[in-house]
Image (tube, rainbow, N blue to C red; front, side, top):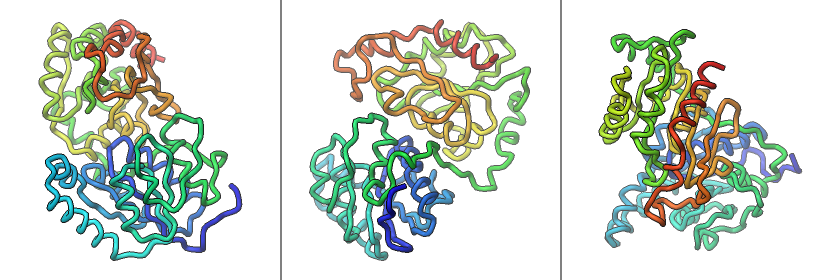
Length: 359
């Protein structure tokens, strides 16, 4: 750690509104800050639904929740009256407190506005692809060649004397005590057993929020159909994922599986993850929930790259598309083919699952 550039008991605002994976990535920044400067006071401004993942975080002294979804919808429809109203609400929330330093680790024009509203005399931004954020900052963190998002977020601490050599990887998601034993109770009447070496529990998340990050549900089914019957397969996801899960199950040719899509909250899902053996997923929020609670994963990558977004801790394995067109980081395939994800073969995934479940 370089010479500390923080006043005693510094009041620090962190602005990272969304999304689930990115908010969890950002917990690594706050954890390292608190680990190295334990007397600082951290306030975090966040939006639902990701806010629930921070409610019990021991590194956060104060959580401020502002729902950006209302703002986004109004901005999309050019509803300037609602835009102004929601920003006024954000300002009223922030103006209840005083901050010495604000760290914008989202890098949006919107997060820049909110950071400026904090009235912190020092406002530190990071170098991201978004334009205009720097207009609201008093200083910018150093740009670095490192691609991984967490390491790039960590640069926000460089002006405070915390360098890359101080970084310890790891995400933080602490569940309230009320979730102890939740998984056992949830599966009690579902013929699913936990912590049984003879019957490992494989969780499967089939969907992501980006269309071109989705592996075809039929491919999931083919990959899972060839697994031994003693492996318990449980599909997770949102209610809207059920139709894709059913398509995967149709390809499994009668092989037993269970869907719990839409039956859990995010924290309940995290409690189930904590007691399971492996998660198969794409690059999406549940991957980072799994990392945060210690569940090993096998993740599938095409338009994004694990070297940019993937878990940095041990126990996580990646299958990167062999297609030459990968890591475009586009929400929709420019070729309209999803060729990168389609190039991952079910047999490759089956082999990797067997190696991880029977290592």
